[in-house]
Image 1 (cartoon, each protein chain N blue to C red):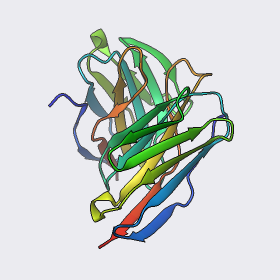
Image 2: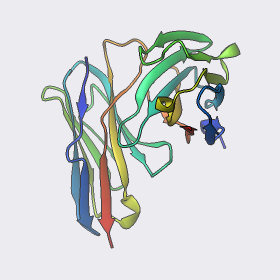
Image 3: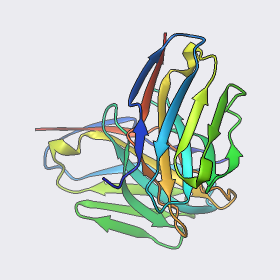
Image 4: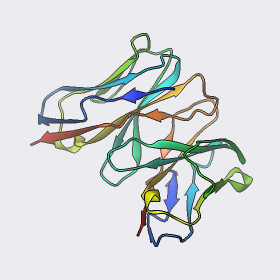
Amino acid sequence: DTGVSQDPRHKITKRGQNVTFRCDPISEHNRLYWYRQTLGQGPEFLTYFQNEAQLEKSRLLSDRFSAERPKGSFSTLEIQRTEQGDSAMYLCASSGVGGNEQFFGPGTRLTVL
Amino acid sequence: KQEVTQIPAALSVPEGENLVLNCSFTDSAIYNLQWFRQDPGKGLTSLLLIQSSQREQTSGRLNASLDKSSGRSTLYIAASQPGDSATYLCAVVGFNTNAGKSTFGDGTTLTVKP
């Protein structure tokens, strides 16, 4: 399977705990995006990497959120001290050089109790 | 700030009907527009990508058009089938962003009844 993969698919945690999600983009894609989607809404942009450089962060991404993309391959999104308002679907997408068609992974569903 | 609107929020049609989904955007300076399909609890599947220089794209029973001057795009689905039932999202990438990030509408949820 050469699509975008995300792990885990589901995560249930208690308020105040830290969680980390992983995204593996399509191998030849240099751009990687994180979005957050709540029920009934379209995805909202969180952050973007070109290779290993994090080039843009949304103001939605508070200090409790951090993302990395070491070596320009997979990416991780960490949420510290989770709050109930963090409950959402976290989506990862990637795109290649010269084009902006984005391909999405299956998402990670986070539930904060 | 770019805003993307999709109307209606929900649509129910009988099987076999042709239908049109609408997407409007406030800033016409776009790089491209992409239509996606999302099944409940799943990720997004890319359907069609229209570059700003193009007027339409076709894939099978799907046809997407783009009118930048009016800030509108339509997704035409021919001969709808129950398997087409899903939420359809449009997303635009603006020229003013060098990140290629997309601004999404909230989607139209389509139900095709057998």
